[in-house]
Length: 293
Image (tube, rainbow, N blue to C red; front, side):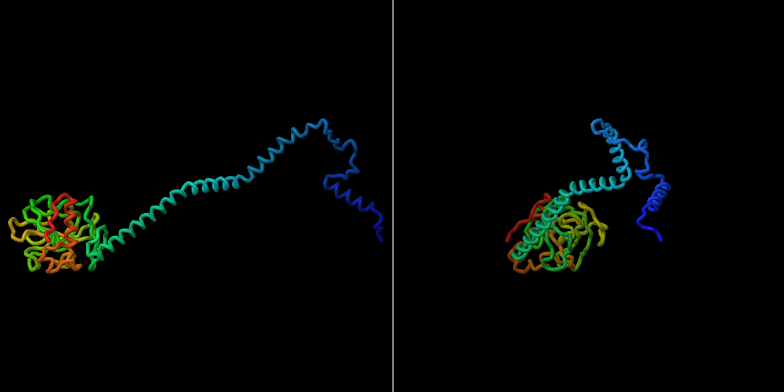
């Protein structure tokens, strides 16, 4: 039986293990082989340890360069986001202001419609029923349709009446929708076109009574601003009438929404649509009509 109180076998085993590892227990190291104790009063070793410390730091940094790149990228991204934040706020503010203006225009148009007046404003929707068309009487891209004619203004009714001679041109870029020369319900022809741009984009304009269509004009044709649409018949007893159309046969916008009646005709009462079109002509440099009733 092994005597466990005898420690020599264990010491021998430890010495053999340390020998295999190339190490010896402190008790087996000769005094001449031992490292002398540090003399703290004359210790120059820290001067050598400082460079070693920074060397270790540099090695740690180089091993983790990917982490540093990721941190730098994060900082740059944060800076860019902080720089774009004011722009985003400005855009939100602009959207809010635009929504407020749109709502205000809608409210004004509604009040004017309830009062029996043609609302002012711009829009691109086509006339689809009574009260659906919001009219404007100013634009920066339209031309005076009476610039090529010599006319004298008459009354404002469904549109604006004139007497004279010369050519009637398109107010803006447009598409011809109606050319009627007989059975029009008018004392003469009826020509209508739809505006394809400007503040009244989508609206219809008619030229009626003592007019003849321009040579070669056809329904569906696209015309430019200032292009000849019709010729005024000189000294025609009925004169001419121009105004907002309804895209409903030879009906006017004023008649379509119930602004025109036999009473208006007899008493020369101008319609709101007629006054609106007269204001548009005046804004383009042409002579406005006269409110006689």
